[in-house]
Amino acid sequence: MITITHLDKHFDRLHVLKDISLNVKPGEVLVLCGPSGSGKTTLLRTINGLETIDSGTITVDGETVDPKSREIRRQRQGIGFVFQQFNLFPHLSVIDNITLAPRKLKGLTRDEAEARAMQLLDRVGLRDKRDVHTDTLSGGQQQRIAIARALAMEPPVLLFDEPTSALDPEMVGEVLSVIRELAQDGMTMLCVTHEMGFARDVASRIIFMADGRIVEDTSPGQFFSAPESARARAFLQDIL
Ligand code: ADP
Image: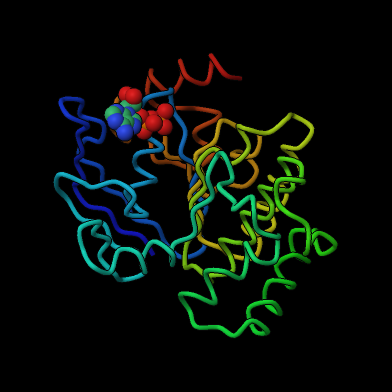
């Protein structure tokens, strides 16, 4: 579903991604973790074409992702991305937030887009919020709407960039349980998160990054009970 080969990226002189290669199969759920500044968010953003790369290749669902290509806008909309800060349109209603891209980019009629949006609102437990403006919702509700909005484009993969780190603690669970259900339904997902309990339960693979490299690519069982690298042992000691 995702193939990355020999990916390198700099921000000016800072070498943020170093020879990253990664294969993700359909239905896999990868949790990306590691110390702050190790390149997790940048890696996620390159998969969605939000960052240029210096060398290497990225393909998603058989298509090469190239931020410089004319196809990139369409491609970006086809890969679901859920941001830390939700990035909803605050001046639009919930239903308009969810139906905008399918109508504009997939050519769905209003009725078709709304019917699908209502199914997604059911799925995230927010059917009764269809007509409210998103800025009246709690953070947890806004993030669930952001997930519904991403799903509305029927993406082959969903990318999550610290989806719960902007939330009050009591709202973390409701967002993680939506992601957990998507995993059970077989959605292919990559999630940058510091929620290690969630990672242990839901991930099929843990990708541990440090200094721009993938240091471990392993099962949660292995990672949490017997991490191979000193970097991962130090990381786990600090956060668990
Ligand atoms: P992580 O998600 O693991 O915390 P990031 O991918 O956010 O790491 O950042 C990796 C490194 O790249 C950090 O040193 C960060 O300061 C730097 N960085 C991230 N985005 C930019 C940018 N737009 N311009 C310059 N440096 C950046």
